[in-house]
Length: 320
Image (cartoon, rainbow, N blue to C red; front, side, top):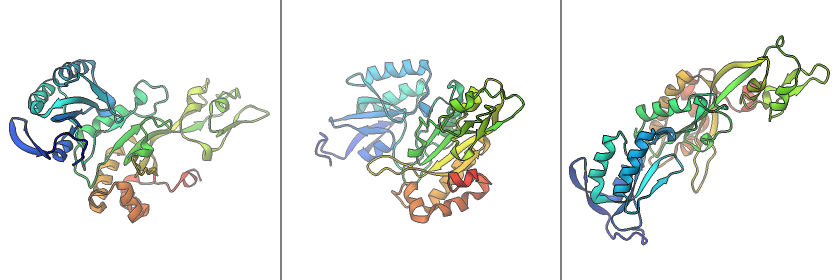
């Protein structure tokens, strides 16, 4: 028992979905009800996949939070969830009933697939290359809550800026585009080389036309967006897949395992990765630790039918 928590018990009598029972704090936390320091009070975490919510629901949540939060406050979590603070556990049942009426669900903690996070993606962000919000919605509907050996976080970034921090997630998908240059429309204006922040494009000193080095490319598409004549275009779009990242006390950076995975294969990557993790992960072991223990080759071999030519051992292997 944390000595700073005022409740000197581990279980409280709660009523959830009309059923009364005595639940311990960890069981409640798993269901999205997180014990606060203050006696009888909890934070209630709400599901907001991809950080997206309609204004109508947001107004409804604000009204419900104003009613049930003893201090009338909501916390915006680092993973795009809304947390209603200072809620008395005796009011869980009525609060959930009101949330259900407006179509809002409680999130969860514990060893399972968590609510996905995502940036704005290609819907409205000029840098976006993939439909990150669409994928976040898909994950929330199909995979949220699936039991895993430890927490399992999935995120989607629309471009190499990586706002959704795929490098710090158990499984991350980052949008990429392979640029292709077509000489006839090119006027040698040198705009593409100026736009490339990675020095992957240099201008020929005589013609001004681009000299492209794919080993330096981050597949961001800046050259495509900058080109005024359409000489640069997208040869193929897809996802850079990362696995095994986490933050916290002992951060781990995710490993890059596949490149230009098409949209249609994203669900397969998720399903097979979860399958591998459930088969091989020890209880309480994040997938990054499982990879560390068994070796990345074990995972890649299992994923061969899905990645099918998209596998990568590093940037050099991809660009050779």
